[in-house]
Image (cartoon, rainbow, N blue to C red; front, side, top):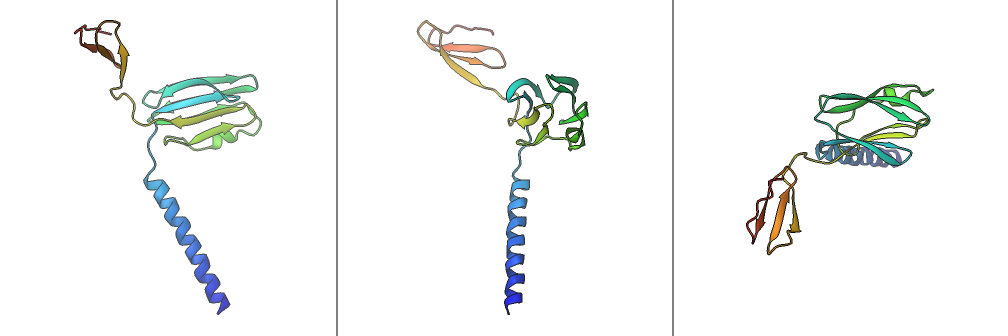
Length: 148
């Protein structure tokens, strides 16, 4: 009887773990930016939409970061263990590639890129201005057109 309960307990724990894993896998979001940190300080930010090869140089060594097809991967490194090179390409928010000997962290941030984002500011005249991130803007009250 006790062995049968152990089997049910193990099956229940495995089913719960599988359910949590499926939930996390189904709700993951694609990232928009690749962020490079060296020794805890952000040194670069790239769009996942671009294709590039960038050498990441830290005081402890060099890594080659390749961004293509919406993924980021470290393809070369001069560290002794090269674990960062053996990690899979990353593309979803929260994923990271870490090179401990070089103190380099590459991780994915952000959601959708390039949406319209308005910033409200006072124009100094009589109205409230909305300056769009992608250029342009209108001032409501004095009807000025900033044409940024």
